[in-house]
Every structure is written in C-alpha cells, then in structure tokens.
Image (cartoon, rainbow, N blue to C red; front, side):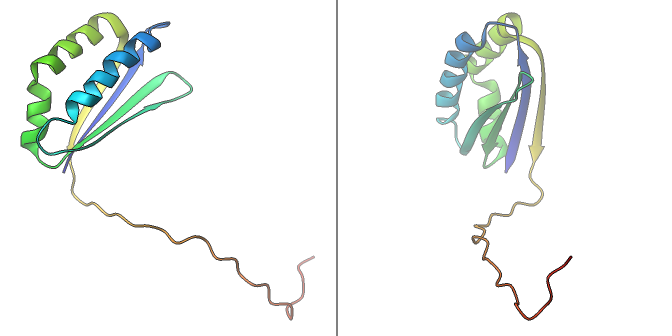
Length: 115
C-alpha cells in the first residue's frame, strides 16, 4: 500500500473557496487505479492534513501525474497555501481490527475498599 500524507496551511479567508477544489480532487482521486481512500482533517491551529491511500505505486503515480490534479496543485501553491509538506510512504506493516467494547468488571465485594 502507498500512503500520501499531505499537510498544508491555507491563507486566511480562503478555506470555503479551497474546499470546492479539495472536493473535486477527492472525486478525481477515486477514479485512479488502485485507489483505496482519501480523508481530510482540519486542526484547530489551521493545519490541514489529507491522507490518500493507493493499493500500488502505479495508482499513486497516475494520481500524481493526472493533468487536472497537476493544475490544481499549481493553483493551490499560487493562491491557497502559505506552506505545505508531502510525504509518500510505502506501507511496511498494516493491521486492521475491530475492537470489542469494554466489558465492565465486577467488583469483588470481599476485598476491602481503598482508603
């Protein structure tokens, strides 16, 4: 699996306008071969993080070189971002699990209560 972590900060007052562009890129990413998921997160301090997962490098390369995506990158650098950082990573280990709900433990009434 290939994971791209894209961190950015937007210029003040442009978030609403930028969201339309980001939504279009989310739609476009979904059409790339090997696409798994794309999620965006916004922190209280203004940082935005996008995490994009592809099943293989070919899909990530197709995304990276897509003409519409390239044009959006250029526009974002010129108009929206004060800074950005991109990391493209290859997954070494991947685990998934559904965690059971926490079970309440019965109190042993024979033991004295702590003071």
